[in-house]
Length: 398
Image 1 (cartoon, one colour):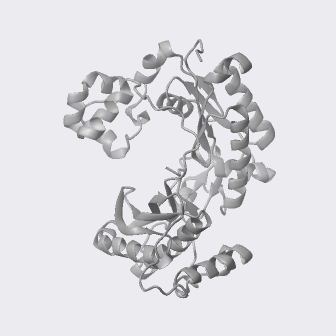
Image 2 (cartoon, one colour):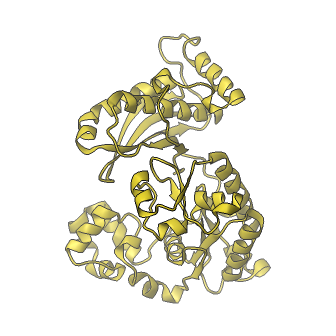
Image 3 (tube, helix red, strand yellow):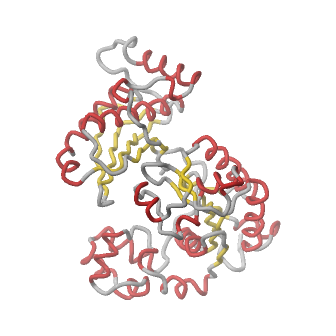
């Protein structure tokens, strides 16, 4: 359906989600700097952000920047329930909802013009409903493309609303710093800055060939397209998750190798339990590491056949970790993540050799039942006993 202004895509993003849920549920925290997580900052309120606190920052550094901050432990169940309530509002607004993570989504409202009016009005009512029904602030960006809608919401934060009309797209986009482009992190920004390129407009004027020579073919072409707001991707609904994962922040080390391996075993337990609960099996095991300098690496191994068997996946994880031990020793380790991808849709999985289900699949099932009944902490690996365990959080869905 034709919509007059053409800016039909909304990017809705809850503000400082974890910290906002804590402030909503505890009136004593409202208006005060809040940090979620202890050893490493999982999230922080805008009051803390204004003092320089950032997600993934070490807890000691965060408290030095903001000594008056209130540190609270994460409550993943509360965040999941809040997310569910907000997504219900999204889906009541339009059936065209594409979730990006627990706290953000794209909404396509092109088909609602005759019933609900222009996207600006829809976005205003959406924000009002989220505040009234979920008790949370949400920022919405509205634009013709998914990329620009997400950029608009980032510029409008916190608790804002920004519409980028089609005839003002490039004027708005080209004035922004290069860090607003998807895929431009610290390393890429430094490369661009070395060539005196600091704005999106300067990226657009470089030309694709120049960007490819500076950044490589894939990233050069990608940034050239975004700098001209070329993003043909539609809002996609009903896509099954392509990976299941979890990660754990470790804080500044040192972290002995046995402890790292114990954490990986814990993550594997959590991931494979979720896979079995979803009746999914996967082939590719992905290990993600973040070092003390905040750089990241990803390593993967593809198995011969799909599986949700804990020990099989753990063996692959530990092999990937062993190959990175020297790099970890040299650079320090602050976060580990595990994901299983290439998921089968029917949950079919071939038994691992030897065919002893009592020691394999039935053991996994028995452990799942105990944790379902008595909680995730009812069973833990002996290697983790007596250790202070930091929060383990799900990886964001792809």
